[in-house]
Image 1 (cartoon, each protein chain N blue to C red):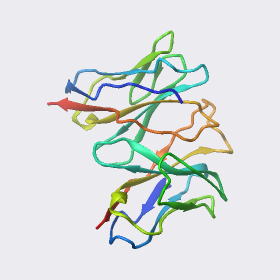
Image 2 (cartoon, chains in turn yellow, brown):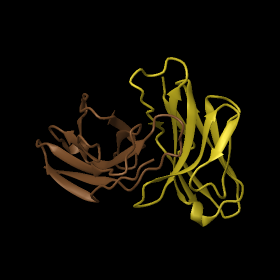
Image 3 (tube, each protein chain N blue to C red):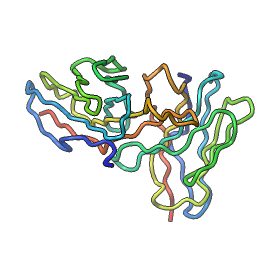
Image 4 (cartoon, each protein chain N blue to C red):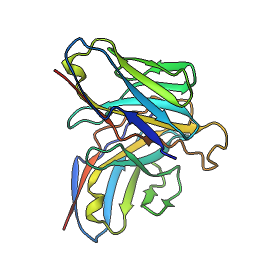
Amino acid sequence: NAGVTQTPKFRVLKTGQSMTLLCAQDMNHEYMYWYRQDPGMGLRLIHYSVGEGTTAKGEVPDGYNVSRLKKQNFLLGLESAAPSQTSVYFCASSYPRVGQDPSGANVLTFGAGSRLTVL
Amino acid sequence: DAKTTQPTSMDCAEGRAANLPCNHSTISGNEYVYWYRQIHSQGPQYIIHGLKNNETNEMASLIITEDRKSSTLILPHATLRDTAVYYCIVRVNFGNEKLTFGTGTRLTIIP
């Protein structure tokens, strides 16, 4: 049981290049999230998904696209990277639909992060 | 989700109890209080949550005031490994996934 796995862990891009961050979870969680964290700041929600085939915008969605073709995977894409997208990106998952936690919790499990630098 | 207010930073001596406060005066009846922490540059880690009763687990205790407008996370015997940023979040459990983390409290454990 690996939890939430993010790839790649590090990436350097040039302005205008595109890339995709992959998030995979093996906990059968229904919900998945992408956050970004800039130095000295909290985490800001980019996009999230409440189920396979569904996505929704978070607090800072501009410049990013996402897809949830499989329940266990949530992809974050940058079509044309900009220096302002230099950040650490965290994926998280939560809420198993089957066997719901009886305490009523909705606990997010985070990945280790992906550090992206755009030059 | 209700807004929370936390001190920017705190220090605590190793071996002592660390008490981290959080104000959430606009909390509504169906919102829970959650605590997470982020050690160095790792992903945030869940610590504990509660609705209105005090809660305790192997990591910490959570004390929620009777009016639910504030809470305190207690690390009973702080160690150097507890140095981290601690986030207090107030949220409903289902129906609103736009969960945003503020800047939290940077707790430094002093040897």
